[in-house]
Amino acid sequence: MRQFPWDDLQYFLAVAQEGRLSSAARRLRTSHVTVARRIERLEQGIGAKLFQRSAKGYTLTPMGERLMAPAEAMALEADKMLGVVGEGAVPLSGVIRLSVPEGYGNSFMAEKLPQFASQHPNLTIEMVNIQQIVSLSRREADISVSLSTPKAGSYHYENISRYILYVYASRDYLARSRPITQRSDLAGHPFIGYIEDMIFTPELNYLGEVIPGLRASYQTSSIFAQLKACRAGYGLCVLPYYMGEMFDDLVAVLPKVVPIHRDYWLVCHNDMIDVARIRPLVEFIRRETTSAREWFNGFPERFV
Image (cartoon, rainbow, N blue to C red; front, side, top):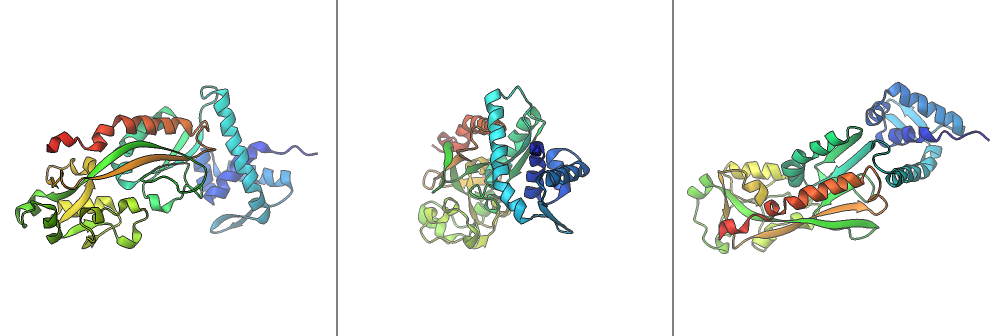
């Protein structure tokens, strides 16, 4: 019986998931020649073609499709074994994809994550800031910081921080507009918000909590584009406190009357939470986020 080339499975998985030799080589930190050679050796060991090659990249053959599930299971078990042996025994390596909300990712984690990456130079960290384009359920990400918990499936999830949002306006806009002294006054002002049919989670549908039935007259899918429109003086905008308070030209409007509360949840598949390369990042996200809870919660005494 021929010896199965187990070590070549990581090259198979990288090409299957990336679709190109060059992308798989960058992920594995090797050359595309090495990846091609290992794929060829694996195919020879199995006695079947695993990929169809074309100008568009590498796609799985029926045999390749059959090999995916056991190969992914073996990769997962190998990661778990590393966790049992101990993280110091072998340097952590591989790819971790983290999915985060845009505001949290750009305003907070983007400054924190390089510290983790520098401590684990053999890991490749991918942070996806456009959360709606990846799915944890389809395993397009390993870890997610989410605004809600999974409704079905086998997941580990934990609340890592509550955060607060207020209605903001630029000082210039307030100086030239009708005064706002009570909640009902808000209806007479233009609002900036998300494109309604592109809101991918109910937790981003804030405006109904400001005034029932309120609609944004200027809509964009990006919270940072909303922030810029607000600073440009277009109108009012619901923003996380930690974003709005970064700018002296913005003012929280009726902060004691219209606070909006949301939560950040750390989510991961149950079978991934103890994987050696995953666990340190989970602990890092938990530690950094919980230590910043006061900042996320908005220092409410500031508005007393």
